[in-house]
Length: 239
Image (cartoon, rainbow, N blue to C red; front, side, top):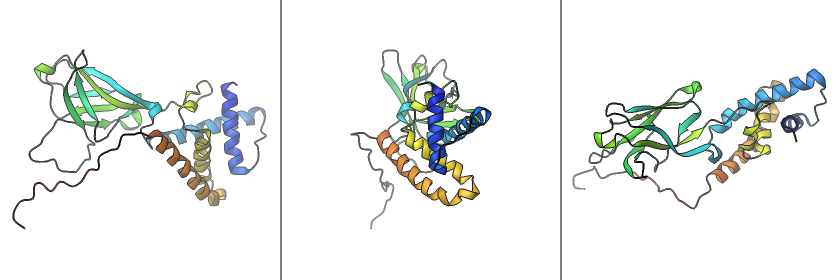
């Protein structure tokens, strides 16, 4: 089946979900119908891609750069990548050619407000994104040392989802299911249409249910994250 047939089928699914009928436009009207769907799909995909670190978009152990000196402590993440993977056990690593990890920088959100322990000041790294321009900058809490020059900077990242076009349909294989795409695009279109505003809550709820299924499948693992409790070790005195 040609790509345009896949696009038409998905566009008709969205139209049927909203209107309960098949779109029967022909010629220029049909082309406009398809173009409007593609635009609506691409608006929705930007919303969808930010919901999780989707496995299909993950790039593990990306080599960001090779350390060349002891003065540079910020490194550019290319615009094709949306963000590093932030997790309690994720690090920016300095890795030698033989695979030996010689340094780890805890990856933290720049807006983190939790206090560090007074007795433990590990290396830190954060990410300053470029917004709609894509990419950004990985900033380390210190410059590399002489011993670290020559090592590679390695981290896990997430790519942007590609846009849907008449010539490129790769993104259709990146989404969890056609159902979640149908409901997502339909939800957005009905929210924008005052005359069908009463339908929006139903679409929104169905979409949320499908999104939760997709996110649960995406995060399926036998590994259990450790619960992070409050640290009261700094409290002194007698009670």
